[in-house]
Image 1 (cartoon, rainbow, N blue to C red):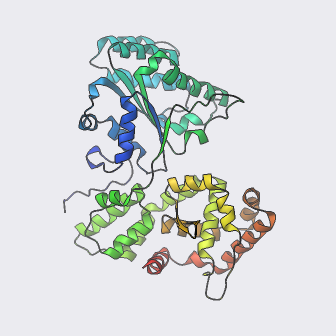
Image 2 (tube, rainbow, N blue to C red):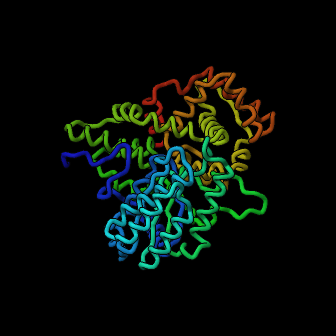
Image 3 (tube, rainbow, N blue to C red):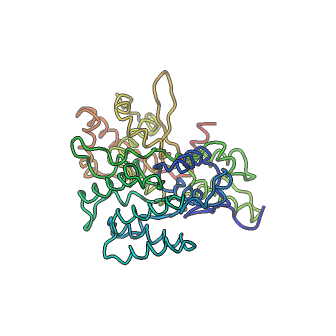
Length: 423
């Protein structure tokens, strides 16, 4: 084993440690080579920033027979523009482009003149694109945390947002200068689920993007990343806890590598205890950033899996849950793409479970820690998904869970019990 821990917790994975995402990288470079536009979306820690960094690297271009010198590559994290305003965005793009054009005096001069203006607009970037095209080059915009541009603020109204997004689309698609522009954007959710509502008959501002989800790692990607000498039981435990999510795998790998480097033998209980402490914020955010409907779907899935095992004496029944879930396929697809749930097909029906057993434990704990006031507040969401009679049954089941406190047992007991049940 090398002396330096090869796993990275928090932030982007360095270029030399980037693995997997073969299909996503191929599609992204295909769009770039055509001056096309792609929008990736996925949960926090899924690898969006790391992928953008990889797409910006000259090595990645050369490996695919492309010439990085053909492009001015600008990476911009939109969360760094505060408060977000279109004029601030265009100014930041031009400022970063000026840095990339350090060997191009005429382009730098043109940009400098534009930056001296009080306000920078879309038309200014359009003029710069024209000059870039005359040099037989193009601009590649890599936009991280693009969600920021899709929420209004005190200085950015919804009407201004729609104008900005429509202008961006016009620049990319309808203008002659769009031939010299490619954009790859990253967001938490699909762009069409964010942003302003379209006016009746309005042309979608987002339909020039190729939408692609960033999902948890495949088995091959997990094996490439997680090459550690641990027991099959512990490896199974890691997969149960992480669900293949890149950020969680990095946390798990970091902890296990340190244990092995200290010439200690890792065990499931100690690992689970440390992992819980390191990953608590991740699961808190996964729950917090889910919509009310998504939270309720997660609760229903958890309750279904808990059904009949609150304890050996008490049982409950949730009827028609399969029907309720089947009517919310859009939200369930989103939850699957974010790596929170997965499904199998049993007797021609989709049966949902949690991708991470720790996420399941977290949701049960959220149910147990709720109270009658919170339950009452959720009733409006219940009635969006089910009849009043069904909602009353679910509320009674939740109250029964409060009495039993099944998940109040430690996470270690929960994980070990899950492993035994699936062995």
